[in-house]
Amino acid sequence: ADFMYMAPPFMAYFAATSGNASLLQASYEQCGLYREVLLFGSNATTFSPVNSSATSGRWHHIVGPQSADLGLWSTGNGWAAAGMTRVLVTVMHAPIANSTGWAPAAISDLTAWIKEIIDGARASPLDNGLLRNYLDDTDSAVGFGETSGSALLASVVYRMVILAPTEFPAAIYVPWADALRSVLAKHVSRDGIAAPAVNPLSWLDPTPWITGSPEGQNFFVLLYAAWRDCIFSGLCKH
Image (cartoon, rainbow, N blue to C red; front, side):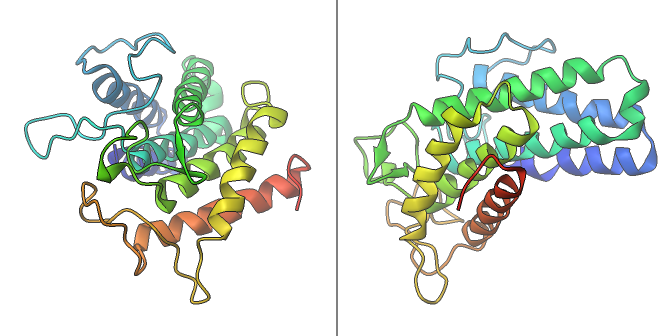
């Protein structure tokens, strides 16, 4: 799932800056194809209907013979949702997309796919106000509440209430993100370390990471930047 934040957004922005409409379309299609594999376990080249998965929209982490992990990893779902948000905003604002016939469908699809993940996370059981390392795991030691996935998924909400206010009404989604942010603020030390986080190099490690996850620290920056912009938009409050 991490690929979703690494590759498609880069493809999309490079396409936008170089005026390559086919590459921009490919960045959107990559999101849909990865969704097929990680949400449905399918190699289909047509995109499955929204809200038709057995996992309530939450993606599996890794599908394949190497390093397979079919758990609903919260950080992986954050990577996917945040990556698609970056692709979405690029398609929405890239001048090259204005002359294409596929852009409206891409905007609609990406918005719906992001919403699937966020709604799945919203329906997941919390652990002391935080999303769990594995969103639905209330039984094992790896299902502890942690800061990385919580921060990244909350950041997506603050972005999406601005980008897609019809699909993400602020009155419903902002309170959820605010509740996570409020709890997360209590998990930052005087030295600026966010904990407990998932071990960034071993997601199945049952021991919370408390010395500072590089990606987890970054997710807090993304969270507060998104909240700041939501405040500027008038949809969020201090």
